[in-house]
Length: 168
Image (cartoon, rainbow, N blue to C red; front, side, top):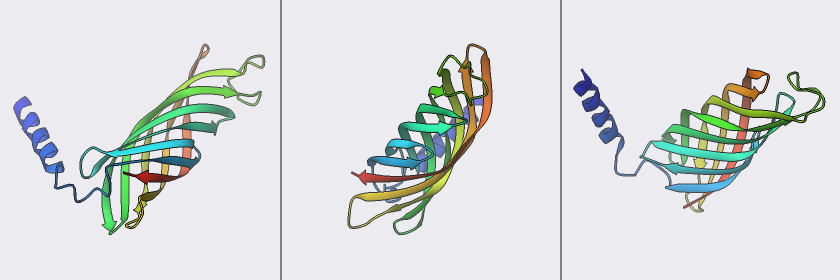
């Protein structure tokens, strides 16, 4: 049974390596705005599998945070230059808040650490004549705030982000 699983995994990996005609570029770097504001980097691992890492600032649940979000995505062409993608990822960072945050002491502005899991889905457009790509995505998930008083799970309503990246 174990050998069958290994053979199936090998066939999946080999099948995902095509002639690099599917992915529109190898790497891209730029900015992201929306629910997460910062810098964005995306690279293709195989023709249809991409890894995207975003670092930035986020305001959520009455808390301001610094966040790192990494996503593994399956990307497929709709037509020339236009792509759709779906996947998932992990995020983490620091959270700071005000009096409105329901789990915070009034004399302390540091809430604690946050980590979570998210789904990601969206569309991407890659220009033919210039090295530029535009991406719009949604990333709903579950976010955990870690404090001395315990861990509190909350819905991460990261509904819309827009990225502009230079491709190379």
